[in-house]
Length: 81
Image (tube, rainbow, N blue to C red; front, side, top):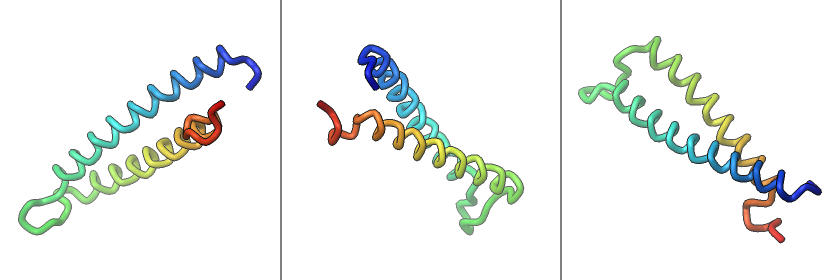
């Protein structure tokens, strides 16, 4: 991107999204543990667990897309100048 100021602003915003993604993932892990029975390791609610699994898959897609954008912006350390 030619406009360095815009690139800096986009980078700043995508880093905020990445941070939120990590917070969301931590919350999802906590929910996943709550949905699992301590007695036998089975789900406490199959329907809710299934919906949650779908949400977790979508969150992983979001995390992957965010990472791809960061890579494109050169924030992986390889493309910085």
